[in-house]
Structures are given as structure tokens and as C-alpha cells.
Length: 189
Image (cartoon, rainbow, N blue to C red):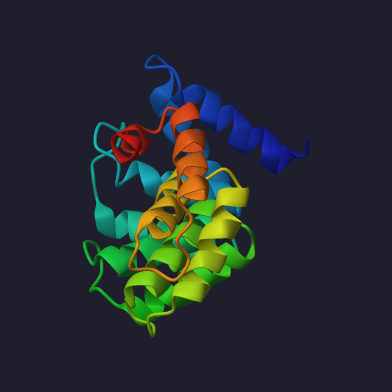
């Protein structure tokens, strides 16, 4: 482990305990300011997580996500994309969401792959393309993403879609159930 990894790991460990969480916040901020992109993203998440030991400030969160993303961090790229997709922190902009989700997804970040699949399936900011959606969902499923398992299961179980395969849908839902993903139980029921 190098010193950046050590500082980040120490900060996360300190954040786990109520008695040391403020030390963890300081350690995480220091690691972020020293250029650790994971720490930048994690520090940003504190400002957008109810109950975190900092005053909630979504704009501050976004600035840290963006800094992390611009340095190439896949999680930071995802959270910038999510911010644009949802339009809660910044104005909704599907083209920007697509850009940042794609950067993150191409690095293998599973939830970004899921969101890209969702964008293509529903035509949010891109032409609707079921085949492209399925491609991204499958990549996300390969990385154990339960959201993608359910989304792909929905596609395979919908008789209106070209790719109907009830057996495969059941397998996808079952694997999400095995991971205790609640929505999958509903889908099977």
C-alpha cells in the first residue's frame, strides 16, 4: 500500500466509528486535497448523504464529484452523471449524464453500465435502442449488479420485447434474490 492508499483506508476506518468520525472527515478531506480521487468522491458523498457527520451541501458534493471525475475516477464520473441525470443538484442534462456515465461504464463501473442501459432502453437523451440497452445491462450483470439483473429480467419477461426469454428472466431474478435484492422477490412473485 502506498501513502495515498493508507490515508484513504485510515480515513474510511475512522468514519466507521462514531467516536472517531470527525477525525475521519478531516483525514478524508486531507486525502482528497492531496489528490486521492477516491477520497474526493467519498468526501463529496458525505455532503449528499443524510446523517453524515457534515452539514448537507449538495453543491459542495457535486464540486468534489466533478473534481474526482475530471481526474478520471470512475465513481466520481458516475456521480457527476447521476447528478445530471436526476437534475436535483444541477440542472437535468441527459447529454451530460450520458457523457459521464459512458466514461465510468467504459472503465467497468457496474452501476454506470446499468444507468446507460436504462438510458438506451427508455430513450432518455439518446435514441431508444433495445439492443444497446441489453449490451450495457449484460456488462453490468457480469459485474454482479442486481439493478441490472432485474432490468434485464424485465426485458426478457416482457412479451412486447424482441428478446423474450422467460427462463433467463427467472434466472436473473433468482440471482438477484440470492443477493437479497428486494425488488427481485416482487418480480418473481
